[in-house]
Image (tube, rainbow, N blue to C red; front, side):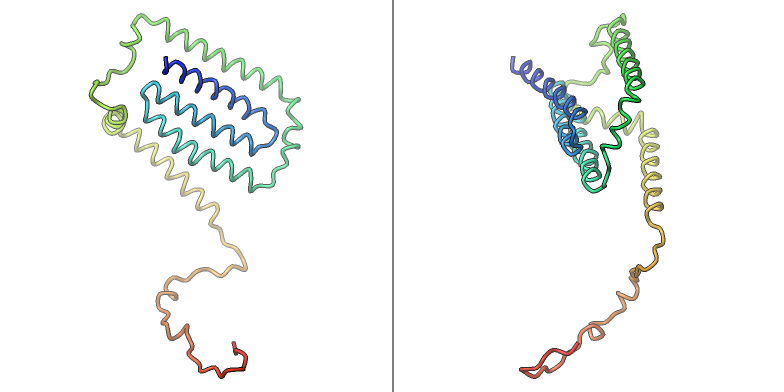
Length: 203
């Protein structure tokens, strides 16, 4: 009974916060509603025993992606009124894409439920005494090790590309010279003087 109430509570909050995310006029409020949707989706994952995915939703999506969206929206001077101006022009195209996506999800759900195997046989078997995180880690570092490493290399290349694009030469900026800072002695930076009282300080 408690599990059912928790499920309906989290599901209603996910749907409500998702709708508010796309209907809020203030983009900062949209990001905050998105964070709430992620938290409630993590609660749903906990109910089905997928604590690894729940932690990913909280740590990766809420802690990184949503906060990044929030900082980008707050720091960049974006004219959202101009962005919304073309909404009516592309409304039919967006509606067509939404209909296609919903149709694909319905077909996928129908194909899943129309299988000849029972639900317990279609789910990947895991021992009862093994936690969900241990089972996922065992698959990642054994069967899907090369794919996991390839995904890491893709992220590494993206990170290096972002650093190269942003780290360009700028005029009028004094670069940091680490070797000169390390070789500098305290007596070169500090001057001891006997300043008489009642007089100003000479710089």
